[in-house]
Amino acid sequence: MSIDPDGLSPAEQQLLALLELLQAEGIEPGEALADAVMRTVEWQVLVRSTIVLIGDLVGSMAAMVALFLSGSSSDPRDEA
Image 1 (spheres, rainbow, N blue to C red):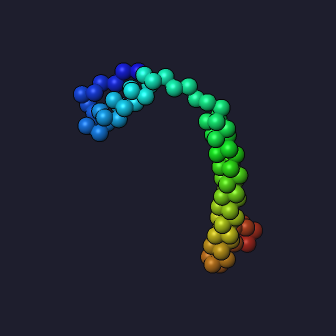
Image 2: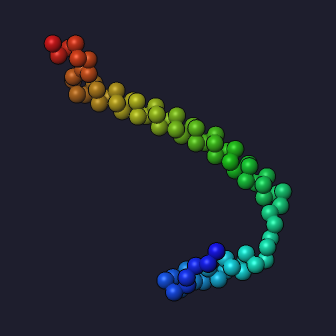
Image 3: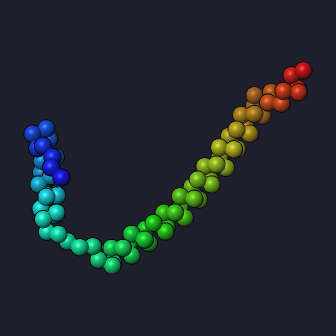
């Protein structure tokens, strides 16, 4: 991958140089890295599903409160 260094800031140029050094070393990921990534994925999936559930519950409660405070019904039969 080749990036034109002319359009980069000094910090980006330094980062690019460090990344090229790291790429040149050719370090192979080990089994410990794969294990660490999988452990992270597992707990993030659990936390994400819990947060989504809580968000859905709070959103439903907010909609219910808004409906009660508006004093109107969304049922079209009530308008007739």
